[in-house]
Picture 1: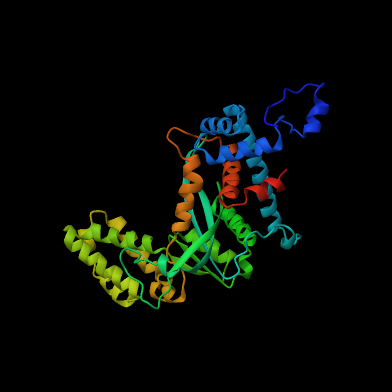
Picture 2: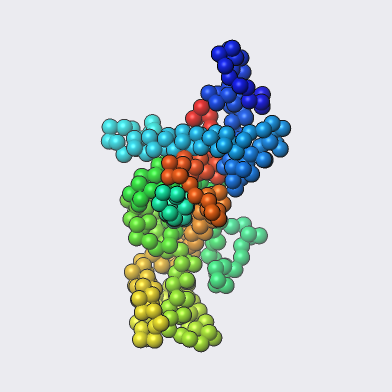
Length: 356
């Protein structure tokens, strides 16, 4: 039944007979409305699409309440489970159910995006993406990244079956939720795990604490970006800059780290337009080289890019929650992010059933 019934004491038996919710919508209608509220770019658009799909009307405000009420249930459930996981008196095996376990090879990446919170302005939200990894089929292979080719004996890897966990958390809160997200994919029993990230120390730390068995890798594209930053600060002529940067990236790609260190030591910092930016970029390579063994990672079949989490930030968070002139009440941020996490992880129907 799609129509909303006005409730009075005379209609209570009918409400019960029709199994209407406390807000007088049927569970099926509420589920459809919630999907629209999460997938559409606004609650106004979601209301229009809902009416077009079902033939009955639901106001923007009603649809917002239905969506965010479910998000609150999901958010409360994940907070309760996360707290229980770190309670020594609880058995973690009884807390979190496994969905779509990754038995062979897994990748875990973590990053941040921004959401405008009315009370606080633009604030970072943190996301962990967990993916299954497999070698690419012949037709899927390409020359990458940045034109640097793989050798015939180097497997190219494909990341798929992504799941997401995103929230407005500080790093140590993210650590707990990242661990829960890993348990849901049964990472403790995966044969191989790698973690490719942008080099941020807090990401390295929490991932090492949660999954010490994971091979940690600095995202290739972030490393290349830093090298281009060094070139921009020190070489004015574009052609000369391109030659210098590509030569350094070739060394990095091939694992010639001694040659790379030698050339970076020769960089004339006096020519820098922004000495602080130059020092930061050079320091990036000095401090991260234990996670920049790209030739070894490729041969071992580890992905060297963190595009899955960056794509996730855009597709899961920014698509719905980062719009011109739009702000979110602080109390609604984590409920929306929790609901979006389940939707884009392919667990909407499962989690809907678990929260009714």
